[in-house]
Image (tube, rainbow, N blue to C red; front, side, top):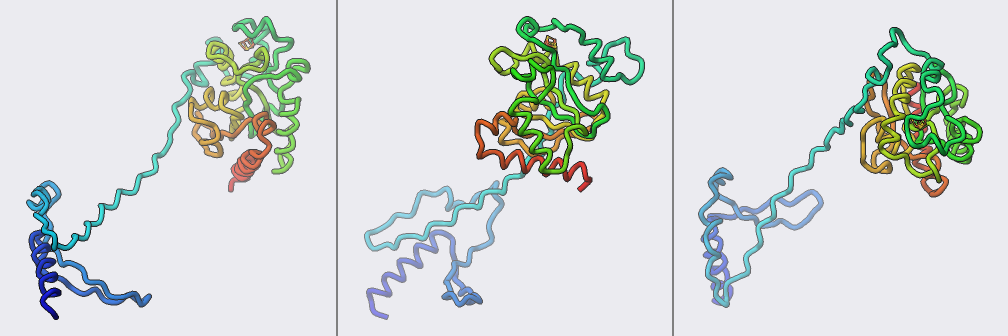
Length: 287
Ligand code: SF4
C-alpha cells in the first residue's frame, strides 16, 4: 500500500468515526453470485424520540482530499392501508319515504296510485308521460337509471331507446332476461333536453324510488350512472372510479356501473359495463 492510498484510507476511516461507525463487516456473497459488499457495522441505534447527536450536528468539515460520504438510504415509506369505503346511507330511509297511512307492505300498484298525476316538481309541465317503472314486481335485480329520455317519455316505459337496447344486450350476454328484472329511474318525468335531474327534482321524486325498492325487495340494486349512484348510495365520487363495487343498501346490496348512454357516447367503455354485468351474474348465482 503506498502513501497516497494509506492517506486516503485514513481520511475515510476518520470520516466514518465522526459518524459513529466503529467497524465494518463483509456481507456473504449472494446465491446470484453478486460481489460481496463491505457494509458499515452501526452501533445500537437510540429510540426515534432521542435522535443521535451526530444527526443534529453540522456536517463534518471537509478538506479537499476528504472522500465523498455515501448517502444514507432514505427511510422506506409505510405501506398505505386501503380504506374500506362505507357509503353514507340515503337521507330518506326506505321506511321514511313510505306514507304514514301504510300499515303493511305496499305493492307497486299502490305506489303508482299514490304518485297519481304527479305535479310535485318542475318536471311535470314539460313531460308527456310519467315513466313509473317496468318489469317483474318480485325481481331479484332492480336497475335504477337517471330519468326518462324522449323515447321513454313517448311510450311511458323505461329504457326503450338506444340505451335500453344496449341494456337488453348486456343482460343477454350474462343470461338475464328483461322480463325477470325491474327497471326504473330516479325521476319519473323527462328532464327537458335530457339534462341531469336537479337536486329539488331528485328530492321530490326519489321517495317513490325508495318505496318501489322496498316493495320489490330485490337482492341487488344496480345503479346506472352517477345520478342514480348519488341518489341511492349518496356517493359523489366519479362513476368510473367506483363502478363494479358492491355496497350495503338497507337490507339489500347495491352495485354501481356506468349508464348505457355513456357507453353509447364512449364505445370503448363497453368493457366496463360487460365486466360489471358479469359481477351481477356471479352475485345472483351466489358465486
Ligand atoms: S319527476 Fe317525479 S316528483 Fe317530479 S313531477 Fe314527475 S313524478 Fe312527480
